[in-house]
Image (tube, rainbow, N blue to C red; front, top):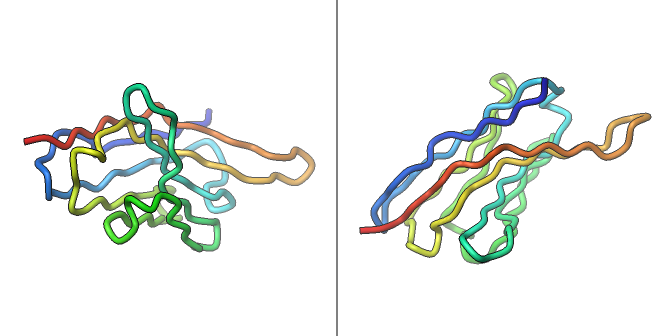
Length: 121
């Protein structure tokens, strides 16, 4: 049973911080690249940041560079997104994604159901 369960979302004031967590189970977490996406109402889903199985990081969205940090803890099968200096434009549903190329199977991809982040006074 594959599961990606996001948590840590909620209501936060502008300038505040949140740490999102994504707990993974049902697959070999350490072999998968992990990403955070987000989707605001009426907009397309946006890739925010990724971390490879080896720990290499890419910050995809220019708007979050210097404010968001992705990390992973393979011992806990968990990926995190530390979000600082939040603005109302960060309001979105944040989704956890796992992706790998599995030998003899091909590309494998899993999604969480999302956690809502609302930045408002």
